[in-house]
Length: 511
Image (tube, rainbow, N blue to C red; front, side):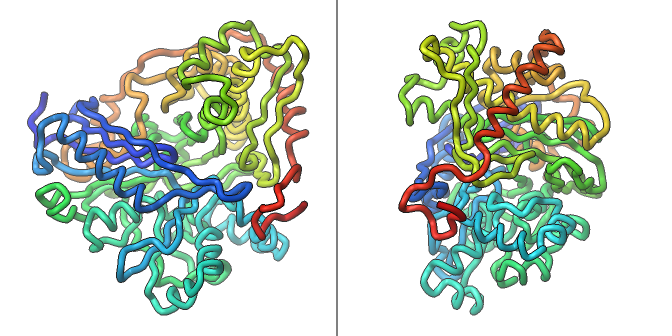
């Protein structure tokens, strides 16, 4: 093991859990700690979390990894941070306390407001400046909702008393004892308030959403000295030298440093990113253009497609339906049948993301017969993840004007061999799984290590990437086309407004 001065701690704050992993200079994990996060669903389409719990659980994970290695904070060279993106927190500048629960990226309460902006003709301007779609997914409309619905919030914001941040900002604020109100450029690019061409907060966008500029964090590069932890937290001030949104961090951890290189992360959602180089490429196929990262001397951009429900469909089968007792059971259950038996599951629990962008779609299962078994439903659930990712992949290849030579995969569900083989088959692209599938945390560690000198260049990091297995496509083109056509028909039935409960949000667009 390398000396402790080369160790990087990565804080990985996801949607359903907080994690901390300590990596060495070879990019190998030495210790890890993980704790679940509570999600709240107060109304149909609403998803919230407790920001205080987010901070406490993340701190506990960090301290847990240090304890496992019998290290004090001074044994770390630096910290890297990666986070669920778009999740919105507003807190008091004076007390450091949130004024409302964190509104999670999956939340759809502002769908009607976004539609009003669309109907008013703002979408082309917003898309041109931000590279994003006008959708409740992103942070801006969430901030606006808090200001309009929490008593006294707008007045306090106008008086400069409130701060807004995504989860990276919230963690850095707490880690630094309130001295750092910052966000990295990749997270800023996910707010609908940031101009990705000049890399600045945009006054016109702030005016459209009614958000005071005084609430916004200072934007910093993804790699380099961002701040230092308050000594009381780890016993010594530790440099925070890397930060990026989870999907950009995963792309960095997958060493997708060259234009055209593409990765897919299977987490709560599914997220495909393709490196597009040093200039933003606006999509013709309803994908997002986003900033990948800024490292010394260079900013990289990416095309992205977001699937809102990927691993969350397995969680739903386990917790909501009781079809399985543990998530690990789903692969063996799905292997009990040779195919889906004509069953298609559309997990549009919070609408559909790319390339559909339909916040009013709702979940659907179709093709059921008396012969349908638990195994068919399990297989349909796994296939739903790969079908959704394939929809994005096809749009991405159309934007790029070229077929992919490989798709690098990561995240917990990438360890499911059945699903990875079906992803390769339905997409017609080799699927490559690395040795370290927790590439989100690894990418944050790489950014921090690059920022503090553990690694000198992306070329040095690229040499650390290691292939574990490649899944080659084996399905015939006729079968692939038949299955994707059937999937498309099922998706079409799920789109639009379906059933809404009587306690739906005020912003619910239809009844």
